[in-house]
Amino acid sequence: MFQLSPNIDLLFTEAGESAADRVRAAAAAGFDAVEMWGPTGKDIPALKAALEETGVQLTAQLAEPRMQFMIPPRNHEPFYEGLDAGVKVAQELGCPRIVVGSGTGFGGRKRQDQLDELIEIFTKGVAHIDGSGITLVLEPVNVRVDHPGALLDRTAEAAYIARGVDSPNFGILYDLYHSTVEGEDVAAELANAGSLVKYVQIADAPGRGEPGSGSIDWPARLADLANSGYSGPVGLEYYPTIESAKSVQWIQDLVAKL
Image 1 (cartoon, rainbow, N blue to C red):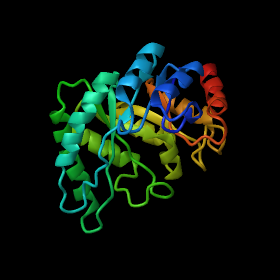
Image 2: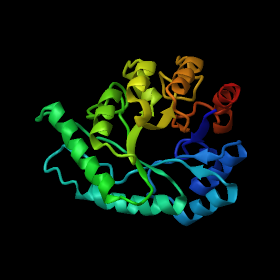
Image 3: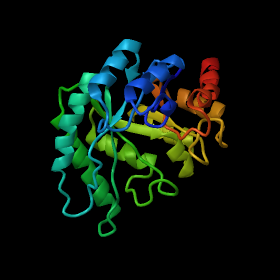
Image 4: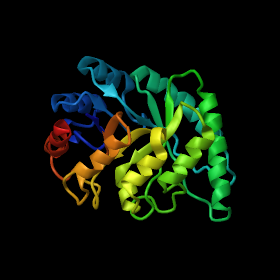
């Protein structure tokens, strides 16, 4: 039902430092898709060759540089310049999505003002890459464990921003791990976000390990995801506690039964 897409910066590291070799290892483990973090430090021609050789789809990459949009002096130009470079790589690799974040919140301003400024920033970002075929997906992250200080930690606020941007080329990355750590009701958040969810990532909680290593009720949560109408790829963005090929087997088997 769901196309699972392991993150090659975290998984199949046993294959070596090369992103291309990790793609080949993922393909050998039965995957037809992978995701990655940013392009920096990767041999893009070699990665492209590995994707073409294996027929594996790159589903998402991160925007670079990581931005602190709300911290003075609030110079956003590096973001738009980074989008130009990121789109070029995404197009070369056949990747349809670039993941963007909110950066750290600024205690000297009202939260609502900062959220509204994100709408302005990302509206300009979408216009900046108009015609590229690339979708920007905004990821809220948990502040309780992994990203203390991040501005955007609630799925509902990501939905608010996506509705404000109001573009078919902008949406939400719903990370079930971050949402769970924040104590959100998964079914309710997915229902509220609806078709704004344009990408999904998963990991278990606590620990951010492979599905099956924590306490999340995966049959129920995957049912929530299916019931929400989402049918796109699901990124496996976790820190494996065992060898990569073994760590993916449990979720592969569960998804195959859906």
